[in-house]
Structure formats: structure tokens, C-alpha cells
Length: 370
Ligand code: NDP
Ligand code: GDR
Image (cartoon, rainbow, N blue to C red; front, side, top):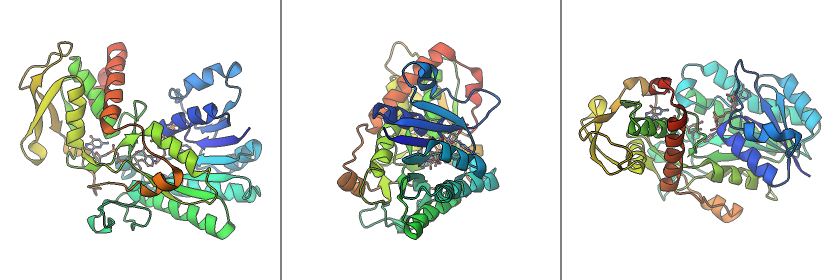
């Protein structure tokens, strides 16, 4: 039986990866932070029945800012594979707490690598580092000839988050080269799911779509509608993480769908799932989306109703305008291909959020900041 250790197990990706590894017969250890309220809702279904089915699933308290607990947990668990997914992962919030982000997302990666070295596990333990398309910064001139970002495209991060993650990227590569460690970067483009954090744009949109359709919310406030992202499904992407660690040689890989879509079009697709057609009008901060047709008898919205407005509070000091990844290497070397396309992803998220809003609407959702 292989043993894996996942940092960030309580997050979106950690929860899907834990499920995947348990299915594959792994012993799965996860590091969770102590919080004043429950923070394990994404993995409770794995945790609750640990006395019966999943005795091969164990959580440990810890934090990426604390080397001592990382060394202790790695020593205790002796993992064959470490997936370092833990991070302060919100780009906009990273402008508010840049030092913390550098500590967790940058130095945290070093702490994991050093812990493995200190414990003499360099030959045994393979390490996956959660790198990101934010490293590219969306600069037009850095795209490849085909108009995509690939493993050879230059980096130009545009946020404290991106800058912290670039340290994580290079220190992982450096430890691979300096100490012959099996340490790899997955450069993952945006990936979403019904478990996506509520302050990321896709989930904010699908939750609001559900709440507006069900008459529980008036309007959705967003920032930059022109931003373009290469959106995939988290379930597909954790499969790629696992494949990256199963290769003969450690290498870095771009994981993406190769399709990019604007935030505005994501909004259109989400509302289309509840039978509502939108028309966008106006410029910049005055842009709004109005209902122009409503084709689902379960969701009756007034024609002409404004359901999306701009709130400049959600603009970023420096923005990444466009992300589009080239999945050629992951396709050919890993044999990886996404199973979900964007329409299927949006559908799953909207259906899940309609269910959630019906069951358990919380008026605070209208004021989600992020
Ligand atoms: P989430 O924000 O959903 O999860 C982040 C996880 O990190 C949570 O479990 C969180 O714990 C944990 N964490 C935060 N701070 C610390 C800390 N100081 N010590 C230990 N753990 C901590 O992110 P995702 O699941 O979406 O992403 C996983 C990783 O992949 C992240 O590193 C992210 O930066 C990266 N990434 C994500 C992409 C995406 O589109 N989703 C794309 C590319 C990279 P808690 O639950 O207590 O907050
Ligand atoms: P991103 O994701 O910054 O790409 O980082 P996010 O969903 O936060 O933003 C995507 C784009 O949408 C624009 N936007 C808004 N974003 C948010 N959060 N809220 C809004 O109201 C809003 N309106 C418009 C943003 O400006 C941006 O252009 C995610 C994270 O998961 C990172 O951890 C990961 O590394 C990258 O994806 C790849």
C-alpha cells in the first residue's frame, strides 16, 4: 500500500485528490489547520466513517508556516508521495496580506522540501508542487507561436500570490536538480467545481445565479468581466497531479483545457442553465446585464431586470487579462485529457448551487466579498 501526504486537504483540490487516492488504495494522510470553527466540510464524508471503511484516512493538525510540525508529520507518516496543495490561494486577497502569502505559498514549499531532506527521504518521497498559471501573468508577448502558454513560456507574475508561487516553482526545480529529488511542478490553469471556494469568480457566479433564479437575491456584483480564463474541472486536474508523480522521470507539466472564456461569457452560460438569457449593455463600470428571456417555468424573472452590475471594489491593482494553456505535453507524456468541457462544468456547478440555495440559503451570500 502506498502512502500519500496532502497539505491543503480541506481545500477544493485536496478533497478530490483524497477521494482519488483512497479509490486507488492509498493510505492518505492530510494536514489541516486548527480553526475556531469546522473547516472540514469538503472531506467530512471521508472522515466520518473512518472507524469503519476508511481507516486508511488520517488527519493531522499542522501549518505550512511551522517547520517543526511538518518534520514531525513527515517523519511519522513516511510518505511515498507528498502533494503540497496548501496555500493562501486567493489572488485578490494576496494584495491585502502579501507577507503571509510569501510565508505560506513560498516558504511553505521550501519547508516541505527541506523536511524531506532533513529526514533523509530524498530517495523515497516524491513531491508534487501546486504551481499555477498565475506565474505567466497573461503577457501577450510571452505566448508561444500557437498563442498559448506552455512549459517553456517565460513567467511574469502580477500579484503577491504569483510572486510567492514563483519561489515555490523554482525551489522545487532547484531541489530536483541539486539533490536529485523526485520533485515536480504541475502548472495548473484555473479549475473549478461545486466545491470551489465561494469567493472565486465561477462559484460566486453560480451561487448568485441560483439565488437570483430562486428569487432570494437581487443582483450579482462583479469586477472585471473582460478577464479570460482557461477553466477546467478540479476532478480532472487531480488525476493529472497523480499522473505527474507516476512517471519515470520528474518533470514539470502544464495542465489546461486549451480553451479560454471571458468572465462575461461564464455569466451567460450560468444563467442559460436556469433558462435565463442575458444581454450586457453599457461600458466599463456602468456595464450591466439585463434579463431578455426566461424559458424555465421554475424560475420566473422579470424581463428587463438587472441581475449583474459592476463593483470596482473587485478590480485588482494589477490584473492578469488572459490565460490559455497548451496541454500538448500532458496529453502526449501523461496521457491526460480532461473529461469535462466548460458547459458540463457550469451545469454541474449551477445544479449543485440551485440545490444548495433551495435547502439552505444564507442572506449573507449576497454580500460575498472576493
Ligand atoms: P483552496 O483555497 O480551496 O485550498 C487551500 C488549502 O490550503 C486549504 O485546505 C487551506 O486550509 C490550506 N491552507 C491555507 N493556508 C495554510 C497554511 N498556512 N498551512 C496549511 N494549510 C493551509 O485551493 P485549491 O484547492 O483551489 O488549490 C489547491 C492548490 O493549488 C493551492 O496551492 C492553489 O494555490 C493551487 N492552484 C489552484 C488552482 C485552481 O484553479 N484551483 C490553479 C493553480 C494552482 P483551510 O481550509 O483551513 O483554509
Ligand atoms: P484567479 O481566480 O484570480 O484566476 O485565481 P478568480 O476566480 O478569483 O478570478 C478570475 C478572474 O475573474 C475576475 N473577476 C472576479 N474575481 C473574483 N474573485 N470576484 C469577482 O467578483 C470578480 N469579477 C471579476 C478576476 O479579476 C480574475 O481576472 C485562481 C485561484 O484559484 C489561484 O489560486 C490559481 O492559482 C489561479 O486561479 C490559476
